Length: 270
Ligand SMILES: Nc1ncnc2c1ncn2[C@@H]1O[C@H](COP(=O)(O)OP(=O)(O)OP(=O)(O)O)[C@@H](O)[C@H]1O
Ligand SMILES: [Mg+2]
Image (cartoon, rainbow, N blue to C red; front, side, top):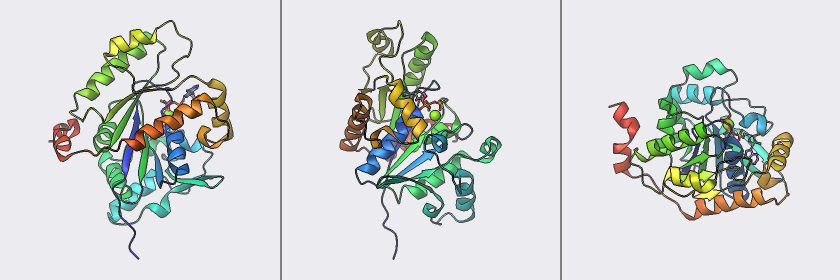
């Protein structure tokens, strides 16, 4: 029997600073969507220093390197059997792990990675993508193909806020629908002398969603390999993560042909 084909929603987590919570939040979004019964694929496209395999205690047989090799050999082949399953108490989703060795990342072309995503989006309701903190060719391609981009920020030091502002302004130049980019603040009440209202004023817009600082819950979740939304401890951070997912699932949004034509990446490769 032929597999059912769908046009899955791609949600990418992006930032202009490291350690802002891209991996922690993308894992929890994948887990919460899976808990709600959606079919979910979580992609670790922090190719060199990916953390998903560590945060979820995975021991993958195949990685994105193998998926790229497979799709180059046969663009129509089913990649699902090559994904790694994460399962906890009846909730399961599939993972595309980052390469086993850092140097493999140099041989993966953005175009082939996008082909992998295009193949898999026909089989999953949601694909959650974890990235790195730079406007690389791969990340630009991921931003283009995404249905929703979560631009994550934290308020700690002045350079971080400066980079957040540059990143946010750059994202706005990409001609995406304004609803595609969601500015989310993580660790909102972590210790800093910088006021949230000043950051909002610098950015020129409010945050779409705010997640609080909860170092103990976040650390315990990573140490145990069990995502916050699955570990049964209904902390404030867990509730805010669930609320973020609820907002995303209520507001489906598809990239239009016009936006694809105007994309920054298409201009670079023209
Ligand atoms: N809301 C939060 N409260 C407290 N700690 C948090 C929160 N979100 C993330 N952290 C912690 O911040 C650290 C960095 O998180 P994470 O690895 O998800 O960030 P990242 O943006 O993926 O980093 P990188 O750019 O290095 O990949 C982790 O130790 C995590 O436990
Ligand atoms: Mg990360």
